[in-house]
Length: 393
Ligand code: FDA
Image (cartoon, rainbow, N blue to C red):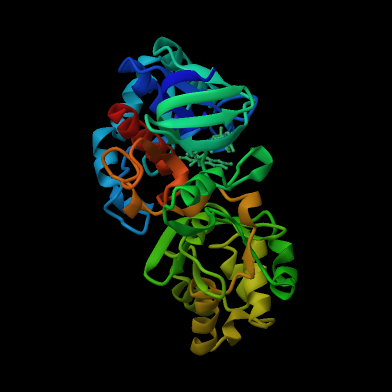
């Protein structure tokens, strides 16, 4: 005999747990299933262990999606401030780090504990280490074959996330279910991911591994100004992760290091006042030493700054502040923070996340073709889409 619930939610991540809380609070009999040993594993490792749980400025402009308007309704109904109120209600200490990014003072585990306690209060039943083998439509709803036995429910919510970090149990399960029910998918690709470089460029940049600078990184009309980090594999840091979501194979990105520094003016002034210095010595007033050396050598500059023509100075400044790089690729799903693409938003009702063509079937969180910038926006989408769906069940 199959056990019967009002709602079965697949995936005990950020979106699934929020949805379970809302549906449970409304008195629905909720079963939350996950194949992992513990719920909210990505919450636990997020934000360097402190979980950047929301961004106080979250709005539609912070999301990539085939339909940029899709996120608006859910974000308006459960805002960053609403989630913050829940965090404060549980006495969790938090702080704003930068650019509206809110983090736990202590540990991301505080957020998981909060969600667990809310689920308990809402009488949500959670089954971990449970595989979902099949999901079938029945007359009254759905029938699922799971490793803990058959289950029936009026509604099924798919909240199994994207493909990022397969080592942590990420699967393409949501996409398989979408395909099974004939829903369109937007091609998936890794987002918020470091760039790799071709072997020649990597060899040239090898001495810079570990150096971090303030930079603006541009792809077409999109630019982000945050830290850039040189790594042993290529380029990383928030500015690179941000632009990676907009970048496509074969495209260039343009990097401006220390974009506010008047590099050409500083070099010209040094040429007048103390011309016997090397260009890299002057540059190291603005840039970390290793970078100053790299850019001077890259331009083949050996003599004194006094020997530099205006053209040479302009060209040196441009090599630092309009530096065009073509990444060889990205580190892929192995390290990507998110998965771009997913269930086409045209298939879903933006108020409830229900599939328009399959009543009772819902998709929330990262598996949907909605991807936030770096900075707490992805969790906010998980909370907001989970809330909208849970409230509709
Ligand atoms: P999520 O991936 O959280 O949950 C999916 C759940 O489904 C998992 O518990 C998984 O085990 C389960 N599952 C998968 N396949 C299944 C199957 N076949 N059967 C059963 N269960 C299955 N965002 C942000 O806003 N701030 C931040 O600080 C960070 N930091 C960060 C760091 C790192 C290293 C990563 C990888 C990601 C982030 N993110 C982030 C992104 C954020 O973690 C992500 O957007 C959300 O976790 C998405 O929430 P979901 O609930 O949609 O999926």
